[in-house]
Each structure stands twice: as structure tokens, then as C-alpha cells.
Image 1: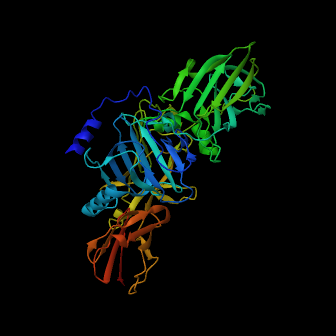
Image 2: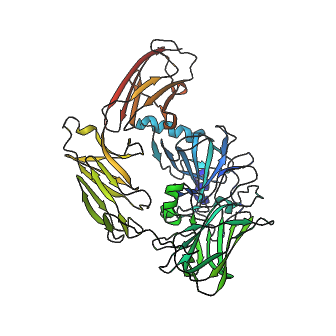
Image 3: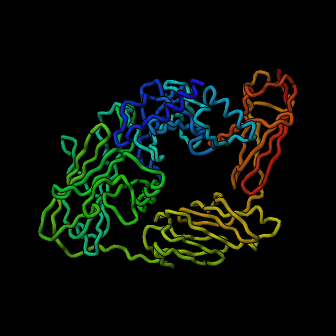
Length: 561
């Protein structure tokens, strides 16, 4: 009774003001020197990174300790994303998040395992009550791993505020040794207005940077006029790691006056996809390099912009010399300065912007409904950032839906009449995105009669494809009819060549068993730690189903004692 009272008292105390971030409240979740493979706000595909990726010495199984008192408020086990994730609510209003775990610890692991067997599902999501799983600072809560969308063993660590907005954990005292200055890859200038030009060119161009002895840069002088914007490609590195991470702060000035300031301190999930507005998306699509814009275009509500004058645009007048500067800093204050001298001069234009043409013009605010061949396309209002010419063509079962050089913010629906397929095949037909070889990748497809539809967030080529080939099941560490008493696990490879694996179900002696699916290496694993029977003969049945309903059944008998 006293324990319950203490827990309720703990969470009824006045919360710390989140305007004053408690820098000494949380301890480190790992008892190793902290090295990072990813930083907060780092530029990822379609999102900003929402936490720190802490290296785990290239191995799994390091113990994770609660950095403060609290209670487990959420547990999620998924094949993708964070994999095995844990959420701890703390009495000061913040929540800490741990992703890609190998397994949970103690009572948490017991609850997860019981729930999985009760639901007969590997993927689960639980929301324990305050009194179910109380946590004290320093408690063992789990072990590091490589589950979900992880590219290697590490701990994804987040701190979220009371509105569930991820904040930079370094603000809370996570200290990483760093005396290295950010790296500058490139700087670009963008002529914006109709009368704008740089070196008699109306197109965006990369500037030549000249390094100075003090580590700063000066750009080769440009001759320009009109309204301009600038962009930069930059990364940071810490002392103990050469990973190319995100920076913390970028500021610019024009003739000594602040132009724009942005800080990677807090980014909500609602705004994270606006990264595609923040970067030069067309350049990234072609060159795979992210240029961060130091000007704020319409339909860009990102809160990382802290200050701006004229939305970061500058106006260069004929006959005036000026200087634009960029300062790039990491969290430790290591700084690189870039100076760009500008000679304001209006000269005859030698290179104009290419004329933009297309088959359909779409107003971003209005959206559009477009029919092309057998395809229907619904573009909702505000799913695009700009009014745009789109090039859309259809060729039989293939839709050429513009080139992926412009970002899509919210889903666009593509529908197609698939009545040219037989009724027997209809359930096996799907809409897939085609790669550069014309091979389809499954897009989640709905069917109503002969009409198939899917939602997309990238331009590109889409087409109808049919998958009649069931998944392949291959046992890796056992053979039918053999004794495997020394095995700690059953390992089975499952593969599907076209539409991909949708689900699987395994039983041993007609009882559901928990098999963990690691999609990165197509591996199903069953641990004999879960086996409490005294039997020696075991009949395994496994059914694997792909995304269009093809399924394969595998059976094997093995013996162990």
C-alpha cells in the first residue's frame, strides 16, 4: 500500500517548468563512454532524426538503465521502425524513449512475453498503467539490439516533452566529447526573383570556397543582382566517431545584420516531413546530397527557424557591394564561418532558367483530379508545396507519374481499372512502384471490384503487377526427423520475391509459438527458452503469407530432450 501511495505522490508533485530544461535530471542510459552514430535533427529521408543513436561497441546485449524515476507508459514491438521500443514517463513531464532493443528486462519482459502469447502475435503495443511497471533511477530496463529499421547495433534514445515533441537530448546534459568543427561540403546560391542573377546566370549554382588558415572559408566573389537565397550542405563529427552527423545551429547575416537563424533543439512529428521543403529536394533526388535552405519558402512551418529577416532572402542592388556570412556550429560551440563577397551589378543575362513544361498544371492549394489512360489520380489540396507543371503519361498498365524531383507532402491516390486481368488472377494483382529496371515494389493496394487503388508520397513510375508465386521457407539449423537437443533456437529463412511477406504463424504440437521476425535478413527465430513441455517429439507447422494472399505451409518433426 505504501508503494502505491509513493508512486501516486511522485506523479502528483508539481512538474518542472519545461522552459527551464533540467540539465542534471537524467543520467546516461548506458554505462559505457557515449559515442554517437546519429544526432538529433540529423537529416534523414523524409524526416529529421528524433533522438541520439548511441553506439554499442558493434554488439548487442548491453544493459540499459533507467535515467530517472518513472513508470513504463508504452511498449511497442514491431518488425519495422523502432523494433522493440520502450517508453518511460517521468514525473517532471518528460518521456524517455529507447529503440531497437534486443529484449526487455525483468517484469517488462515478462509482461511482453505474456501479452504476445495471449494475443498470439509478435507485434504488439501496450500502454501499462502508472502502477503496473514503476521504475526507479538505475533500474535495468532492457538490452541494446538491432531490431526494426536499425542499420546496425545501437540504442536510439529520445527525450520528449509533455506534448510528445522530441527534444535534443544534449540539452539535458548528455555530454559527448567534441572539439572538431563541422565540415562544410558545399554552399549554393539561388536566384529567386524574376530579375535575379548570379554571374549572369539565373539558375542555382555552387560557389567555390577558399579555405583560410583559421578554418574559415571565403567564397569566390560573385556578381549578382535581385533577390537571392543561399543553401548549405554541412555535417558534424565528434571526437570518437567519424559518422557524418547533423549540426546544431546555422546562422546567416547580410552586411552584418541577422538574416536567418535555425537551431535543432525541438522538432515535432507533425512537422518532420517538412524536411522535404527545407532541403533542395530536386538536387537531393539527383545528387543524393541534402542542401539546407537558409531561406523560408511558403508552406514551410518548421520551428527550427528561430529568427529571420525577409524570410532569409536578401536583396542585392546594382552598384552596392555587400557580404553574406554563414556560421555553422555544433552543440559544443565549435564553429565554422563562411564569408561570401557580393558585387552588386546588373549585367546582361547569359543563361536563363529552363522553361518548365508538362502535361498538367496543378495549383497546390486546389489539388486536382486527373485521368490518364486507365489511371485516375487524386491530388488533395495542399499535398504539394508549390503550383507545378506535372508530366503524366500512361502506357497500358504503367503510369509515368512525373519525375521524383518535387516532394509530395501528403498522400496522393492512384486508382486503376484492372478488368483486363481474369477474375481468378484479380486477388493477386497489385499496384507497385517501378524501379529504374521496371521491377515493381509492392504498394499497399485496396480493391473494390476491378478497381485497385493505392496511396503514394513520391512521384515516379507505377504499374500493375501480378504475384502468383508463394513465399519460400527454408530451415537453417535443423532437419526434418532429426534430434536437435543442443539447439538453443530454431532458425528459418522466409522469402518472397515480389509482393513481400505480410504475415506468418507458427505452432509446435498445435500450440502457437512466438517466432521473432528479422526482416533485414529474412529470418524467423524461435527460442527454446519459451518451451516448458516435457515432450521429446515436436511437430512444427509454419504458414507464411505474402501481401497478395499467396501462402506456403511448412511442416517438420524434430526431437529433443
